[in-house]
Length: 177
Image (tube, rainbow, N blue to C red; front, side, top):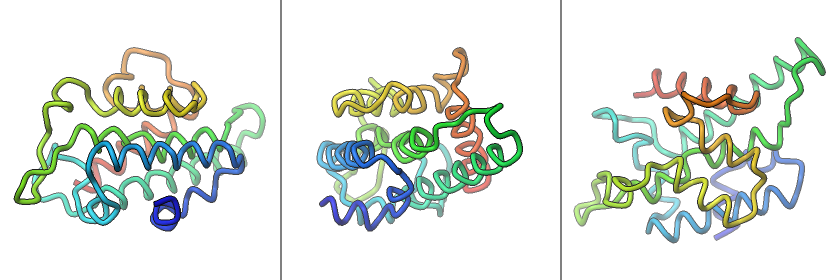
């Protein structure tokens, strides 16, 4: 499964720290197994259930937002240097895991369609995503991005990496739905 995840998410190679990259893959493996989804499912399912006729898939969304984050970080670093310190590995890991909890929040019906399931009613994807990340020993800085990327983070101070992710995610959400 690890090879398939790495092939589906080439952005994993952007993470310089090997141990962090391996933990991100571990979370992906658990999420797929727990949610009962395959990578094929993620290449075909919409990235959100909050709009009708969404043509952007879950994997397309994750990859595009991750790439946007890298681009934004590169511009910020070129423009401001060390005055705005960023940890790119943390940003990339957070970008690849921010929506991982959707594999638990979403439920596949017998006809193949998706709906928000009971688990999703009880815990939105930022919470279940943080739980899986915590279980696999990801840094708190990565869990912070997962936790605050959506509306749950509107009342806390986001880290610089979480700010970048939040804006990339919502730009993609607003354009792609």
